[in-house]
Amino acid sequence: MLLDWIYQTLPLRKQWRFFCAIEPDMRLAWAQQICNILKPGGELITLMFPGFREIVNLPEWLGNLSSLQELYIVGCKYLVHLPTNEALQCLTKLKTLMIYECPELSIERSKIDHIPFVKV
Image (tube, rainbow, N blue to C red):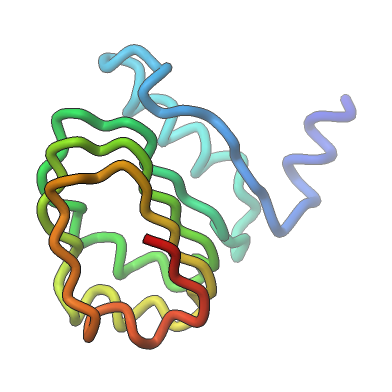
């Protein structure tokens, strides 16, 4: 099948799915499926946190996503903190950080100075 070939062949994948649109009890299975279809050695280059109303802190494991190039945080009304400076400094390929409609978020500029394009 064409999809099987695509999933086995492509080293790079951009997944545009609104996590909040996935039923909460299905989110772990969705994340596992993404891991399964990402070719070994493949890279996750874009991540979006859209409208997570319940999230207060972004997870520290973001620092493990060393291939991440774009991070979008939108409509997280109760988000207060980004990950630690140590976690964010591990994102050496991150070129774009866009944050919109996160009224409670306090941003320490020293955490994001290494990112070339930041829009808050």
